[in-house]
Length: 329
Image (tube, rainbow, N blue to C red):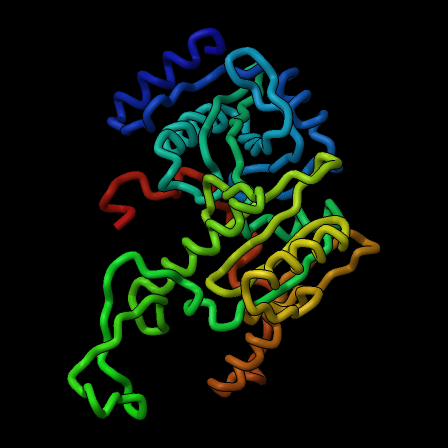
């Protein structure tokens, strides 16, 4: 099967009438190439684990016969018991052919390894929230939190908008006049977008690049080759970098254009507590207080806890994923 794998898989996709992404091609990757890409599948090179497989940092992604450094690679090793691996492999390829609706973290399926008994799939991986804590902990980054005061008032309007004179500010000589707004206000539908456009312009003018997969993640190359990250959620910011001097410099730049509230080291955001042990290289996200608050609200504070909501003997596979539009509805 190894020699004709791409043709067989393409034929299988057409038979099942699965619409592939534009430019979709399944590339055959050798096991040795995968060992290079993952640095020998070493734990020290792994930054996370998910239902789709292991994720490795600073990998070498195989593209058109050459190796490119710096791409994060997700590697999914499938079961090879009897014919289960073969079936699971084909099913997984079919489900990932239109990957943009399957998993928000996986950008593109590049191909797989079918050497001997190996059945391994390789994806591009986009680092987002699900692995951010692992990424920060492994790279021993500082994580600082900031808020922008009255963020929406910074936005500049592109169209002409007028408003009635507010109570208490009516011009008695011209009570029938209206105000012509030059800046956005809270309550306008376009205020969030205008604020984002202004902030995006500020970041790009300061040599930050916007992530192509998440428009609220910015990064900038530093002189030593590392990157400083800024994550924006409405008016909340997280800044991540391994040295505080670069973080302080970015904070100073932000203060020059916006009224900023510096919250220091990030310990809690959106009700999620960040518990960090830099000595052990761990960062844990906890909603313990929130859960206790919800339980007390519904008078379930004394309920008997269980370690997992599902029995330990339950097993899941890609075969149980929805395969038709009716299943996904």
